Length: 376
Image (cartoon, rainbow, N blue to C red; front, side, top):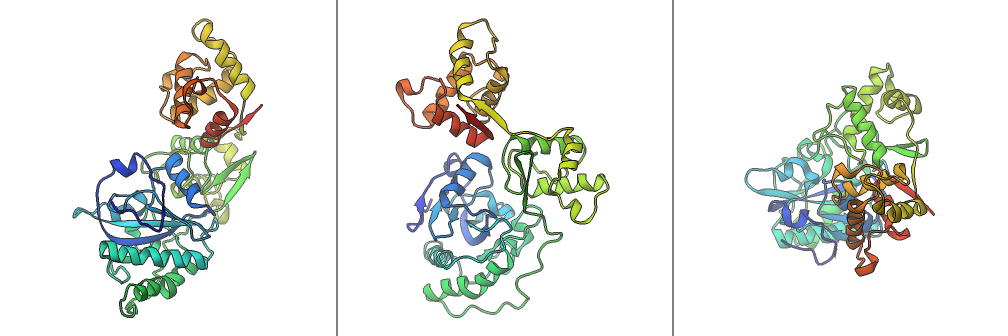
């Protein structure tokens, strides 16, 4: 696998070692619809989703690489499912939540440098991709085969920059000739209808594109139960993506909403109708969980000191892959202690520091990853 020397290496596992090899023939540029640094993008791929990109680019031009360019990353849909083994390299770039802002000058420079390296390293031809599987350079919305259900990423401002600054800059520095004017109008019409990508806060929790947490999964599972899950390919999870918005819009229309009232972003009335309640932020007391960790293992099987809060921690450990779901019972017994010790070791604790008794830093980190707040 190849690693770009101009990027900080933040290797994703198991994706980097476990995903199929590709022969890279395209570089596709995305906007992530979040003002994130490369480190935050890495954490998102690591903790929240399996739709990773090869590179992440911050507003300041800092760039990180998560997967080698000769290994598949999943952000380009069918561009990485071609039977001849070729594939696309993807770069996500920080943007506003609606991905309508232009790339900063630092981002443009970083994209040009990366594009030149891709030409030199992998022989990417110095042209716009003419079809979805044609070698060259492109932007995510250029072809519908590059996304799941259509995308408006990147926005019009960045498409213009791609055509007027980024690709010409790559060609010039790589020693190529002028970029030919496309025969067909560029960019092509954005897929319709455009999917809403803004957020709302209801009851202290965020909903809409980019929202994360167990409440997002709860909404998705309720949509499926109500018969509005047709846009999911693999079922709901804790990250709100376009299929969640499209499914929620179907539910809103089933309630009689129309126009912008049925854009797929929840309101309090429709959310209460769907769930029967409005979810509240989940809170775990460090003192309560520590007391349970010191009390429950020494009492009768299944003893619960602070069962509701312990269940939140146990489910988070299940989501980390450290605890079997059968042990989500509200009793912080020896299995949960062992699982929590595994999480502490995952954070770098050793010896007596990885004793399975929650501490402030480790419990806060677990809460940040899995949507609960820690109090003293």
